Length: 223
Image (cartoon, rainbow, N blue to C red; front, side, top):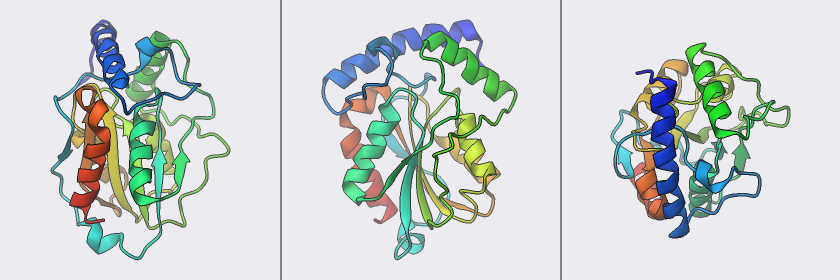
C-alpha cells in the first residue's frame, strides 16, 4: 500500500544506519558514484531475513539449460549491484546495467520524491541510450531494489521495450525488509508470456551474507 512521504523518510533514516553497519561487516562495497554512507539502503522497509521466496514458476533447470543468459540490474545505491555481482561470480554471465536517461537525484529525499511520483503516476522513465537490448537472450536474471513494495518504474520501461517478452526471468532484489513477492506479481502481469521463476530477496539484515543467499538461490533454481 502507498505510504506517506513522512513515514517513508522516517523509515529510511533508520534503515540507512543499519545498512552501513552491514556493509562494514564485509560483502557490500559501494562504487565511487554511489551516494554517501547514510544513503546506502534502497527505499522501502520490509520483511526480516534474506531468503528465496516461494513463487510459482518452472525450474530453471528445465528452461535455462542450453540457452543464452544475462544478468540485468538496476541499482540506485549499489546494494542490488553487489548482489548482481555475487550472482555473476557464480555463473560467469555478462552483467548489464539498467540506467535511466536522466540519473536519479543524488539527494536522498529528492530521489524518494521522484521515485514515489513515478510510481503514483505509473510513469515510464526513459532508459539511457547505451542500455543494450536483451532480445537475444533466453534467460534474464533481473535485479532491482524493492521500492514501496513493488518493482521500480524503470523496470516497467524495460518490459515495455520488449526486452523480457517470452523469456525465462529469474528475479532478485534487495530491500529494507520486504519480500520480492509483489514484484514477482508485477513481472507476471507485465510479461504474461514470460516464465518468471522463484525470486530472491536480500534484506538489510542479510547484506553481509548475500553471497551465501545468492549461492543457495542459484542452487534452488537448478543451475
